[in-house]
Image (cartoon, rainbow, N blue to C red; front, top):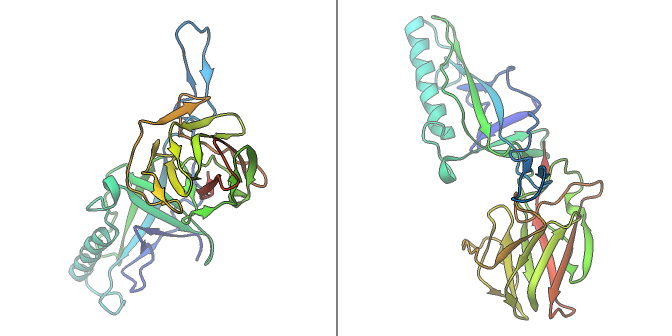
Length: 293
C-alpha cells in the first residue's frame, strides 16, 4: 500500500509481521515558512528580503503498530505472552531503525516516502518529541506515534542527476530539475577549467564567485548547501570530495541562504555561468536533485 515509509532503510511494514504502518501516518507533508524572511542593513531604511532564505523545519507524523506475534508471524495468546512479544518487537524496531541510537551523520535520520514502486522522496530528520507506546492490557498490538522534525522542511529525490554542460557566458535551464516545487539548495556545482574566478548565479542574480584559478584539464566542485568547495582535481569533477574549503568562496547578490539557490520553474531552474580565461572546454555541470514541499 502506498504511500509507504522507511526509516534509515527499514520498512515501517515489517515482512515478518512484527510491526506495520498505521493509518494515522500523515500522507501530506507540512508547508515550511522561511527561517529568515527579512534582514536589516545599517544606514538603510526599512527591511530587506532574500528569496534565498533557508526554510524552517516541519514535522512528520508516522504511526507504527507493534504486533504481538511469534517468530512465524502468528498472534500469540495470553496477556503476559502478548506483552512480552510487543516489548521484544518494540526493542527490535528501535534498534533496526536507529531511533534508539540516533544513527546517521550528526544523529540525522533519513525518512523515505514511496508513492509507488518507482517514485520516492526522502527527508533528513531528527526525533522532535518523546513517545510512549499506547497499549490496552491484553491487546494484540501497541500503537506508536513517531513525531520527527524534517530539518529544512523539504523532501528530495534520492538520486543526484547531472545537467548538460553550461558553457561560460551562457544562461541555461536545468531540465533535470523539471518537476521541482521547492527551491533546490543542495546542488553540487562541478566547474571544469580553464576558469579564473568563475561565477555561478540563478535567474535573480544571486549565487557565488569562486576566487580561484582552475587550470585546463582540472576541475573543482562547490557544495551549495555547505558553502564549501573541494580541492582542485585532475579530470572530471569529484562530487564526493570530502574537503570543506571556504576561503575563496564569495556570495553574490545575497547575504543569507545557500551558496546557490535554484528557483523552480516549469521546465526546470535557470543557472548562468561566467569564467575568466575561458575556452571552448570551460563549462559547468549542475549535479542536483529535485526538491518538493
